[in-house]
Amino acid sequence: MFNTRAAPGLSAYFWQRQDLPALIALAAALIAARRWGASGPAFAPRLAFWWPWLAAALLFALAWSGHGWLMGGHDLSRDEQMVLFDADILARGELFARLPADWAATGEALNRTFVLPGLPADAWVSGYLPVNAALHAVGAALGDAHATAPLLASAALLALWACARRLWPGDAAPQTIALLCLLLSAQMLVTATTSYAMTGHLALNLFWLALFLRDRWWAYALLLPVGFLATGLHQPIFHPLFVAPFLLLLAERRRWWVLASLIGGYAAIGLFWLSWPSMIVAAAAPTAAALPAAGGTDYPTRLFETLAQWNANGFWLMALNLLRFAAWQHVLLLPLAFTAVALGWRTGGLIRALALGPILTIVALLILLPYQGHGWGYRYLHGTIGNVCLLAGYGWIALRERGLDRQRLVKVSSMATLALLFWLGWNAHRIADAYASLDGRIAASDADYALIDEAAAFSARDLVYNPPFLDRRPMRFDASAVPGGSWSPRLCEGKRVAIVGTAALMPVNRLFGDRVRPESVGMAKARTQLRALGCTEVAL
Image 1 (cartoon, rainbow, N blue to C red):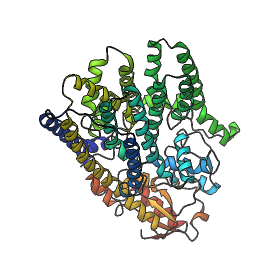
Image 2: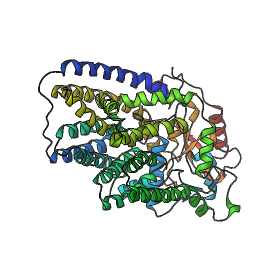
Image 3: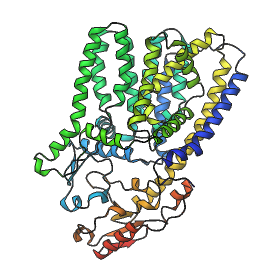
Image 4: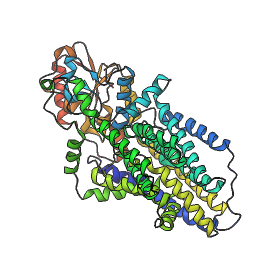
């Protein structure tokens, strides 16, 4: 049984059930590729101009459809749900949603996890920055919000190709290696079926890098608009960590005017996005008297609160994160990238800048947030996968200089990666399907409300997802957070409540190997209270 009741237990579960077997398979594939791929003709692909475009189109179709057949059409984590939550708000031309007085009084029962702190009780919006939600709002306006991430993934592939062509013009081998490493990344593919902001980080970072490599005034002028969007995707830290090494590269090249303009521009961008939460709170409660006592609105306060919770267990969690990242990539990606860094670090230049992006991200997240929660691969490194793919291209050139650039090596390793991708995808589907099936049963129930016992199964609280304007039935309540005395009797007049307790959540407990849990005290109290107010229980 896995200790999934403690959040880090999910990392241990992933390690034992997915990552360790995948790493063993990767090691075996690498040995096989080295043994059977050391002979034969050299790798000399002909990368036709239309091939990356076809690959991008296939990637889009696979990821877009994959939200249905891989993820069961379900937004598994609270992070994903809050993207669509905010997208709904933005699509209506609002910055936050208002709740009627009766529902505002229900407090945490509606699930305010990741809602921006400091808002008055009748207002809610997520604590994330809005650009990813805005992109999904555009996707929804065009027909499907879940087409946004697949489109961004396809754009990332094309942007990577633009970078590779700029770095190795006329040399199809490293270009193809870089594209293969991204295209066969299980992390990239599975994440593209979700609404996580990480696909946007990957696309915008690579678009930024493609402009940077152009080394033209107009390209440098476009870096700040792209940086504005990338910094405001969901958390302000990720894109600046990607950019910082390239600012050092500009200093190394003595491009002082470009460096100064970018530093000044990013300072302004940072100030704007760091002020965003306070601006939203001020708009929701224009007078200080209207604000609740809750703090933690501004980023410095939230940063210190996060740092205060850090402990040495973060090193263990980060080790699991990095092993998970390795397990979800192409067999050749990290060996080739490490080769490039080992041979090219001392010379500085672009190789060092590409390598420093992931390194800085790892160090920062080790300090700030070593636990990632749900994630297909290590999602906090997602925005730098393009860096590592380009490093793999440099690593392939190093192998070629040593006579090891064999076509069979690429074929064997890519076939092994493809087989592993199917296996990892199936594992992702198993987890998502357990929740998606239950979510579908709740949505199809003939009830006005659904009372969910979040203590009865791991991550059951993520099933308590309500749209911002409460325009979907059944409305969902966290049983442990139903307020004791402030629930209005009007809310229960003639209403039916579906009970989502131990029996309904059994498939989730079975998935994680957890014991069957009895009904929680919070669930028993909530049922008693709702019955007393006139609600009628119905079967799920």
